[in-house]
Image (cartoon, rainbow, N blue to C red):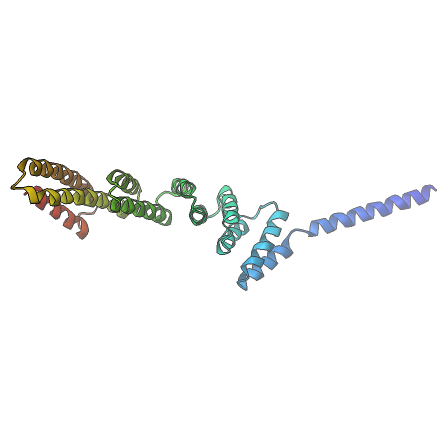
Length: 250
């Protein structure tokens, strides 16, 4: 009986070792390779599914694959998944600027503007001066500013243009200051246009309007000067300064 029990224990140990060896082989390599092949074949859904399976096996401990999964999720317009995997890439500090940009792009597609801007700001802090991040940020506020300007909301337009002037890239700062100069110059010019017809019939109204316009021209000149200090040779800036000076001299 003792010999039988020893044999039984020996069999059990062998089975246990076999099970451990089988588990060790399940590293997710097959899933990862299948995902790679599917990606090369431009079968993005299959690539995504296989990479997700692989990442589940390795507990997301493959930063490159995490990032690639986020990219594929974006291609598939699976924006929730894209945000999830870009977040994991950011946690792993993998391709930080690109990961923040990808996450912001996915959030923009979902019309989650506040989260998109917060992501861009975090990305710019992590990767100072990154042109792609700043371009997306500047483009957003430029469009918003122009929309408010067309609607006649000077305060909101200025608020958006000012955001652009806070960036580190010189060309964006110049664009922000130039947009502010144009905003106040146009407002002043519009006021002058409105009061000019009564210059001879209602002098008090004309004088008040002219004073208000001049104040706006002075404000515009301040922002144009800021732009000029950054890029003295910029032809758009020089044209704006000349235009403002002409009105101020009247």
